[in-house]
Image (cartoon, rainbow, N blue to C red; front, side, top):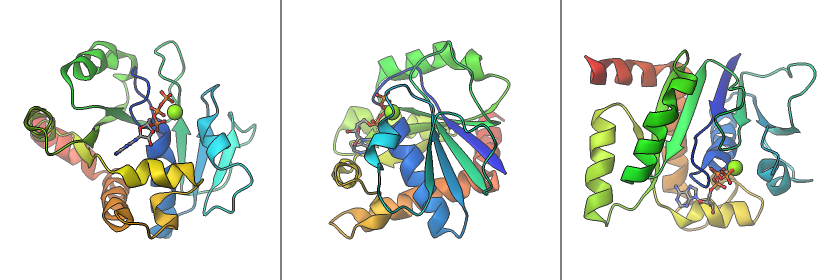
Length: 195
Ligand SMILES: Nc1ncnc2c1ncn2[C@@H]1O[C@H](COP(=O)(O)OP(=O)(O)OP(=O)(O)O)[C@@H](O)[C@H]1O
Ligand SMILES: [Mg+2]
């Protein structure tokens, strides 16, 4: 079983959005996924309270590891916490302050595999696009700014449970990210970028 943490020192960068949509992408790829909401805000639990889902959302750490192919841990934006799993997906925005904050605190997870995700990139903005492309050349995964992510969450859904405008492209993006981290391709990309 793969264990993946969604963690970042920054708040509001998409940890919960990615945990839920990646779990739905896992299901769409024929894998059983579990989300453990380890954030005291319990956003993931709140979003999916009482909903019929393609995956389970646990409040906190389950006493016994549930059966499945992959677990996503949705963590709070703090550095004084235990980070679960071997792989850490680190979402951030395409801005210098986020990149600096992540670089400063990344030693917290230095013994783990790390996949930086530049999230909500507004490709119409030249500065964001340039910064995101630089991060991409260093092995980061890019996710576009798409209102469908917040529209789906506001209905208690993932982009896999709606056919609203933009959902199809968002699904493809989430499937690419899921396949990359499930197969370990992200590690290859980071190695190539470092060499
Ligand atoms: N790719 C995206 N495009 C547009 N909006 C996004 C994207 N990803 C996330 N968002 C929006 O950004 C906001 C913050 O996302 P989210 O709650 O997932 O962040 P978080 O890192 O979990 O926050 P917190 O640190 O408070 O737990 C939400 O309104 C979400 O819908
Ligand atoms: Mg969150």
